[in-house]
Image (tube, rainbow over all chains, first blue to last red; front, side, top):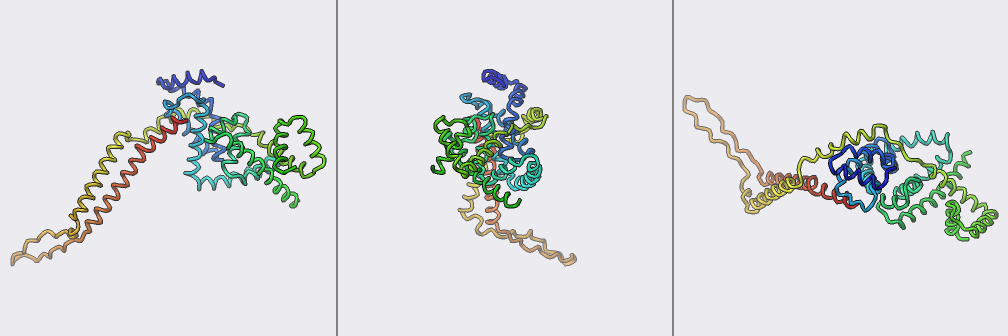
Length: 184
Length: 174
């Protein structure tokens, strides 16, 4: 993990023309950026493309980064917006791929981990914003403030979303498990 | 106990934020209520599964790909905002001029292109038939030209001025 001072120093170097210093920032935040893109797009290839695009955008906007927030928060917002716009652009293609991926994913996770399969089945009943909010919230690497800023929402709205999502998931699990019990 | 407050209590219990008093009250309620126990089991399942999530790992060449593509995006925008603005102005002026000409009624009576007059053949020459005049609706042609100009102006405005401006603003505002 790099410190904020080190981060600012790297940004100064990049703005001063030492572009290769940007590789250090990309290296540092690639997993975070890719995870956000994955949660939005649910497709590895699209997520990689979106995350890369976001890093390239961030590089070009770096002059406009005012450093009041952390670079990571600023970057996550760009990643999130890029991924959302990718999703809008490729909605049809994605929905096809996603359905396919999910079907195969379910088959394997059902064997490996029933709980996970049931929860992911319940997740399908959440709206997109709630699903994303709860997934990012539960990733230990992101603070509640970071998730709120990344998604462009205030903390209270986000808390309500997460709370609502958890209860809805429990409701859906109840239905799913009831159906499961009936089929046994 | 109301369902909403029960849920609150159960979620606080899962997060480990219940004080001793409320914890005891919940334990007593759980012992006597199978419905509450079931609700806790479902909320716990959600909590456990989501807590196990981990960061995704991108391809190993992710950094290299970002670094090699750093300047590829820029080349796609060939016009600077200044040049874009000039082009938008140019097309707007062209549209304005065409509109003025249209309003002046210049094309109202121009629907035919007369054929080039064919010289009359002499008595020893073969007869050449004259070419009939071609009918062209100039008004329609000008309208199409104006439409194309307008579309071009809007595309240029979007690509060279609006898009870069909002992208820059989004970048600066974050």
